[in-house]
Image (cartoon, rainbow, N blue to C red; front, side, top):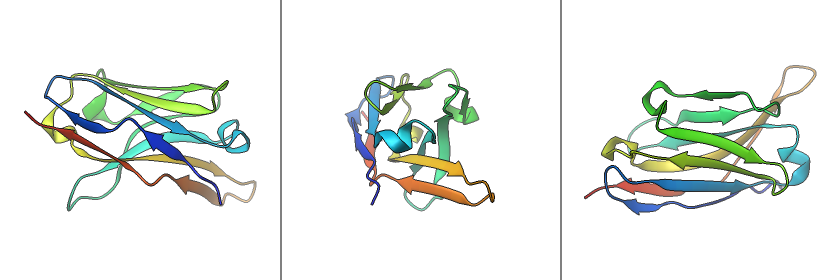
Length: 120
C-alpha cells in the first residue's frame, strides 16, 4: 500500500501563509505527477496545483500568483507554498500522485488529507 504523508495544515488568518508537505516513496515520487487537491464541505474535490517529473506545473485559476508547488527529489517530497490566504481557501487538502500506464490506465494514490482553515 502506497502511503503519501501530508503535513503542514492548520489555522491561519486571512493574508497569512502556510506550507504543506507531502512525502512519497521514492519509486512513486520519481515518475509520478504530484499534485494537491482540496475539498471544502459540500463541494467536490478540485485540483489546486500539480507538478510533473519534468518540473512543469499547472495551477487552478483561483490560486495563480498566490500558491507555488515544488518538489525536492532529495527528500521525495512535494510542497505547496500558500501565500495571501483567503477564507475561501479553507478546505481539506489532499496530496495526489498519478500517472498513466502504457495502456492509458490511470494509476493514482491519495494522502489522508490535512485541514487548512483561513479565519480571523
